[in-house]
Length: 158
Image (cartoon, rainbow, N blue to C red; front, top):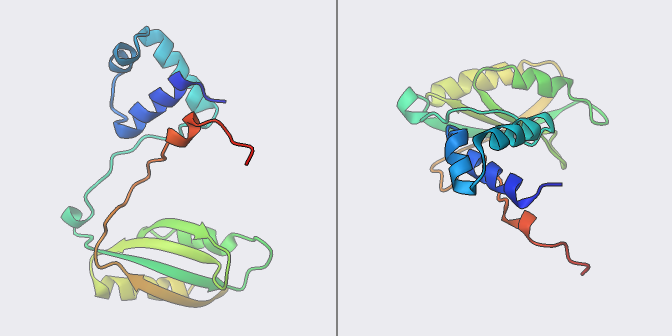
């Protein structure tokens, strides 16, 4: 599926998406045009889904992170409520989950007053039965990076 060169390109882009094709090519001892072609193929095949800058939420006045478990009336994998949750500006992530709840929502807000306001918006979405909120006191690790090291290891039959 992915050869070692593709994995190395993905590792470099994941660490710094602004790395130039020329720098990647120099690192891999390849032509920049070959790197560009490989990156385009990785994008077309869906291995690279986008590029974005990571912003400092606290510096932007969004000092409170919360996770909200949402229980909805939806049946059998429907995601209409999830789409409505995802449309809220403060919501960063919406995950459909197994268990008693239907969704796990990550949001960033200014403070507890802002949290109360957005929770009111969440609860006003038709079909939502209940919410449970957990406020983050501190973050020890937060990343969107995927560990590519396991791709190097051969599959075991065990």
